[in-house]
Length: 402
View 1 (cartoon, rainbow, N blue to C red):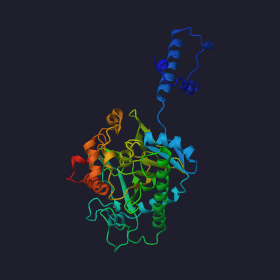
View 2 (view 1 turned 30 degrees about the vertical axis):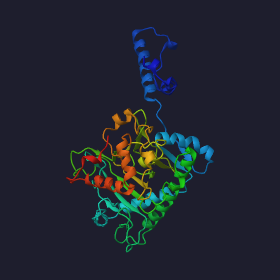
View 3 (view 1 turned 120 degrees about the horizontal axis):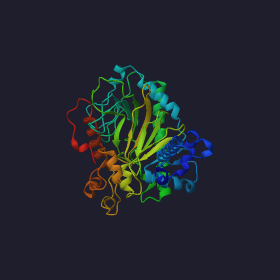
View 4 (view 1 turned 90 degrees about the vertical axis):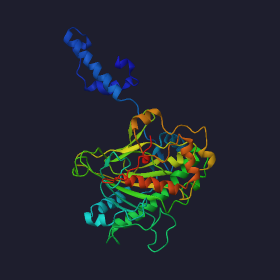
């Protein structure tokens, strides 16, 4: 029955070479041979069922003509993610620079801590357990946040901008220069990618303005993930993960990852899809703000990061592309009655609790984006994530959405 029900019977061909041969030219002459033959087809059917098709993450080459990119962007908009090449980013150099930063002595890193009395402001070092998208989980990673090099003595424009908090003594360090260069190069690649996407999909938005005004508040977040057995003294008994299930709140995210793997997103059928860490590629995830701004033409995927295998570590560089601090959603987009559901029932069931900007399926929640500045909403979200840190008692139930 499994063989007959299989949607990919061709997958049997992958399994048959590894199965025992039926003797006597395939003629079954005894009960033992009948059992052997039954086993062959049972294993083959199982192999076929395990090979069920899953949505792959489409590949976009920024060097290709718009007509070539259009199909890939359409598939990526439905899934909420694309793999990107043609970006001119030196991923290996940036990853090596992040390793150098995280290899600094612990006291040096802690002295550059991100909690500087400005709740929601994301700069500097994040210790293990320093934040979590969901209060129930320990996210077993350390991080570092930086962005536009705001002059130390210049007045800030809003609460999402300000000087970077580099570790003491890092002036002139090659790794710091490389990370600074990578921030600007990645921001440029993000700008090109979102413009190409808007053009290819004929989105009802001004492609050039998607990230305009967000250059000084967009942030780069470096992460170093540990395997589950490490740092056992931190929050013992608490479920451990890399990054809890969430959507990204902004326009888009550009991710460079090492070869370890672990990034997953939810397909429409509620199955987790691995995003392969292939050399030379970065990943672009589309965010909540773009989903609402495009009136549902782009999907904001629920995604997570699994912890690396035993004795392995994972490194990634993640650029969060923000619109301007004062950006608001056009009222007609916020009130659009025809907006499709943000996520399928299968996705909601598979994800359980997850962190998101607003419940995009709720018109009243969407109206907040028409009435409040994007920057104020994001500051509030970052305060909630910080409140979920290990040892904090200020967790607010409103920081999770289902």
